[in-house]
Image 1 (cartoon, rainbow, N blue to C red):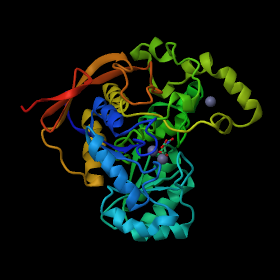
Image 2: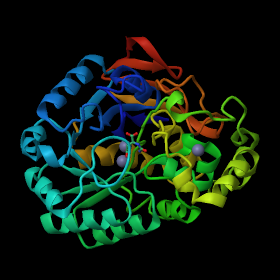
Image 3: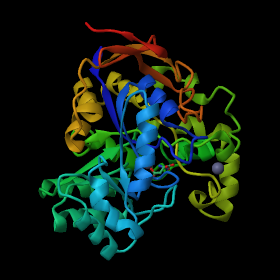
Image 4: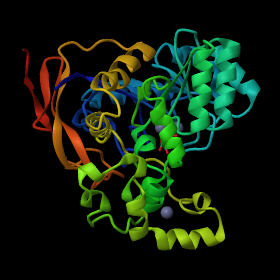
Length: 397
Ligand code: NCD
Ligand code: ZN
Ligand code: ZN
Ligand code: ZN
């Protein structure tokens, strides 16, 4: 099956300042291996992309190292609001962090938020890391300012339902959801330990069900939130080198809506029970490890698996991974660009060695259906037989 070059609207490529986790070269290599020919890179770098100077440095690195198209977000910071108009000329969109996550960027206070909104031009998107009540604040800001607001990685039932309501009221809001919030629950998070810890956290089965209920309506974009951290930073993963339980399952038995029952006991129950006796697990589990999981190489295979299971159509998959992000972020077309997938191939993930520098995936060992075979970017074959080529080959049909 031939797909267009896909767009990942939410990745962390870590440069500058976090190159031991990822850089523009390794991150775009992972993107291509995963079927993405365009990625939008987040501003929570070191330094964060809240000033024109920092943005220029990152842009230079991106231009010289990237193997696919990369667009950079600007970050909002209370101390640099004056830079926003100039950043708006360069950045693909603005990112505001309203809740705790990895990195120094967090904006508090309605007044500050209103000033940031006022300093950002109407024709470019404002993207929010907003959880729980912050989603309501974001909806209200869209209503008051009439600026386009995009909600990143929505994970909870109440959040997606509030956004559905905002849309039905005609407010200029859009949203994205990640595969990890569609395929994993809190219980998988306990099995995976720090390797299943990210912001927003993994939620309940009811939240997962709610996201799937909105897959053909409220959800505009699937993005990976590719957020690599090294194994050193994440700490030991007891079963990392063992076969995980995913691959003991026959595909037919693998029911995503009950994905966790089989996995919990074997590895994490002893730990989790310890934890339950003291404080709520979510607060105890990963206090000292950075949140975030890689996703560039698992996103398309997971969504192809969902399509093979008829949880969405292949047409909808292309809307969520290409047409909608292109429209919402106003991205240019890429000519002579396509991705060839084998949508029937059944295998244990990952099919090929991971290209992300962090070298692990929370989906390792999972039985998936559908894999990237080749990627052609502007007439040059950059992925062949699933492997990123060192020397692209001419491939004009
Ligand atoms: C992201 C990161 O590591 O940069 N972490 C995460 O858990 N998602 C930050 C973010 O997207 O909130
Ligand atoms: Zn976030
Ligand atoms: Zn843990
Ligand atoms: Zn992110």
